Every structure is written in structure tokens, then in C-alpha cells.
Length: 512
Ligand code: HEM
Image (cartoon, rainbow, N blue to C red):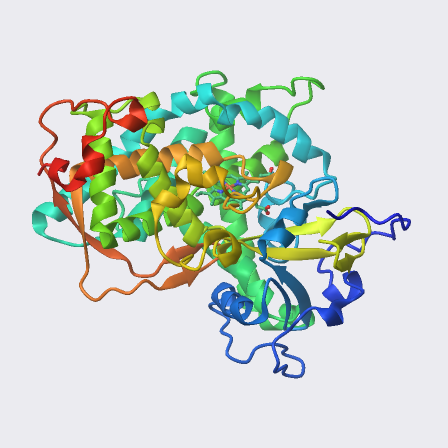
């Protein structure tokens, strides 16, 4: 157990980048890579395209807490389960808006994801929007999610009929973007019909890439080195703002006519206690935030899950048997039937364990404190939690932590683990507001795809991971092969209250 020290809290460190030298008085005790290049820092063996995977490699060498210096910035990274559990203590630590997240401020300002903890619009927007992610709202999104999923299966049916492979991350990104646009704002980007991405998507990807690029250039040199890129970024952001403003204007001109979506709620709902409403400028920022936060992460989670399913036929057969059993032959599974896919959900959890698609989050000390009783931190000092390594801590997940095994998420196994060891959605009051949305969407889509297709991997494919702000399997292609639908509703299994014939020999129940 650790506590906040009784030393008076020091002055908070300034906003913007806070070097570890300022915030960690005993930084020298934290291991760092052995070879440090003057000016550039710990760049030996590192690539600017894979900062996360380089950090994972260093984590394996340097242990549960370590530091890195890159382009004049020194920061501390943490992944040991005990240290992360301490950082989850909301009384002593809070979200830190720094590095990649702070770079998104020109795009998303004080929107939910990028707001500083003390910005009043965070609480207002959080309270106004929380019901939009509650059970009733989710049940309302379900039919829209099914509609979008149908556009995906139409596309995959055509590929299956032609014997063509599908571009999994590309198609999952089309699906999740259309889903958030439709359920959030009643908008259709036409992603499935276009050969090239919608200009809004191109501008969004450009702005995200720019935010990440800023991390790889020393701040004083950025105005010179990134002059052209900054001009393009300003044009991208202007395009995004214009598109969102048009959307909002159209809705304002027809108030109450839109569906009960996120935009409707933002425009028409007042704060339950203060009666305050979100300003036009803040609504714009929230719309952009949801479009950005709400699609690549879920798209990556689906893509990794499909990769693992294609590589583990036994797991796929068991998951498919569950879908056949729980859904039977119904063409359109209902909202409640999705939550009953317990094993499919475990496949998703296990994929998010190995590749949490938002692979890090940052925590800062609310007052002077000592992390896990060992590392003093000044008020405002921060650290980056490396979630993929937390999820592979052998002390928690065992010596085979790298192995894909959905049974790790059986209720008994989950109960036997300590708290705060599985954090794909972050932690505390700033954890992901879209968690249930993402899990419902992804479980539904996996269920639909498993039921409809056998998924054959491309010969020779080895998983490699692309990094933007999120992670994604690189060049993942699969061959979907149509199954025939299950003949008749099967008896309920144990996970939905009946016997479990599939548990004995799932492969015999897959049909097709
Ligand atoms: C598998 C999919 C997803 C993953 C892995 C994920 C992950 C995360 C993580 C780790 C955070 C915390 C970041 C931090 O502490 O800095 C976060 C925050 C957030 N996410 Fe998600 N997310 C997912 C899907 C979604 C979806 C579908 C939406 C919207 C519909 C969404 C909206 C947000 C928002 C608005 C925040 C900021 C919350 C706040 O600070 O109040 N996310 N997400």
C-alpha cells in the first residue's frame, strides 16, 4: 500500500510536455537503455514507425518500469501489474493529457478525449452523453449496427463467390466508421460503395498522422521541419470542421427530426443538474472526437480477433457453435442475443489482451506521492502505461502469456486474478465512454461473420503490426468461404442455461 506523502504538494508542473527530469526526483534509479545518442536519445535499434513495438522490446529487457529519451524528451513507462494497480488509484492519480493526446488538441480541443481534467466542459459533456451509452440507447443503435454489418456481408459474399481474399483492416474500418457515423450522427459516408476513402476520412487520417509525427520531431525544430505538413494539417482540420458544421446545421434546421443519436442528445439535452447546454463549438469537437475515437480502435479489435480466429480453428469452431446455438436460424439477432455470445466475447477480450488497440494511456500524480512505495513523483509528474505489456505480465498471466487462449476470460479465471490487470479501455473516470458500444458492435459482427463464413488465412501470412495512434494487423487478408446456415434452432447450451453438446465436440456442430 502506498499513500500520498504528507509533504505539502509542490506547484503543479506546467501544461505541455513535462520531462521526467522535472517530475521524478529519483529518476536515476529507473533503468534506461544502455546506448544513448547525444541529442537524439535512446534511438539505437528504434524506428520512428514503430515506437510502441520498440517500447515493448525495451520493456522485456528493462523490466516493469523504465525510461526512454527520444528527440529531447525523457519519459517514464510502466507495465508491471503492481505498479499499474497503484496508478489506478483515482485518489492519487488522474489521466494525463500529454504526448500523442495533447497533439490532438488542435483537432479535438476540450472534447471528451482530449480535455484537461480541470476543463469544465469535460464534466458537462460526460454527464450529458453518459445516457447515450446506456442500455436503452444501445438497444436503439442495434438495428443500425445490423444494417451496416449487412453492407459488409454483401461485400464479403461477393468476394467469397469470386474466390477473392478480403482486406480485413480496410473492411473493418469501413464498417466501424459507418457504424459510428450512422448511430452518432445519422450520417452515411458511403465507405462500402467508394473505391477511394471519403475526403472526410482522408482529412481525418491526415490530421491523426500529423499529430503522431509531432512526437518524432524535436519541438524547437517543428516549425521548420514540418512547415508544409503543418499547412496541410490546417487544411485537413478546416475540412473536418466544415463537414461537421454542415451536419450540425442541417440537424438544427430540423430539430427533433433526427433519431435519438449522439448529435440529437448533444443539441437537445441540458445537463441534468445545472441545466447547461454544450456550446456549438464544443459540439463540433465532440462530433470529431467520436468519429476519431469510435472507429479505428474497434476496427483494430475486430481485425485482430478475425486473425486469431483464422489461426485457431478449434476456437473458431467453438465460437461458431455458440452462435449457431444461441442465435439459431434467425436472420436478424436481437439486442439481447448478442450479450449471450459469451465465448465470442472471450475471443474478443483475449484479442484485446494481446493487442489492446489503444495501446497506452498516461497517468499523472495529483499531489507529490511515491509510486508503489518506491518511486517518488512530484505533483503533475506522469508516466505512460504500456497496456500490451501489462497484459503479458507473466506474474499475472503465466509463463505462456503470449499464447492466445480465450479461456483466460472464463468467469472463474477472471475472478482469480487481481484487479487492474486488464485495461484495454483505460482506467478511472476518464476510461472509455464507448466501451459497451464497441463490445456490442464487435461481438455482433464477429457473430455474424462466424455464422456466415469459414475464414481461411492467406498462406504464409505472419502477423505484423502497423502503428498509428492505434495498432492494426498489417496487410491482413482472409478468404471468406460461405457456410450454409444452421438447419434448425439448436438446444440452449450451458452458457445460456442448457446442456453443452458443443463443448464436447464443437467441430461437429459447425454445419456448412
Ligand atoms: C475496442 C474499441 C475501443 C478501445 C480499445 C478504446 C480505448 C480507449 C481508452 C484506452 C481510452 C482512455 C484513454 C486515456 O486514458 O487517455 C478511451 C477513451 C475514450 N473513448 Fe474509447 N476505445 C474504444 C472504442 C470507443 C468507441 C466506440 C467510442 C465512441 C463511440 C469511444 C470513445 C471514447 C471517448 C470519448 C474517450 C474519452 C473518455 C473521457 O475521457 O471522458 N471509444 N478509449
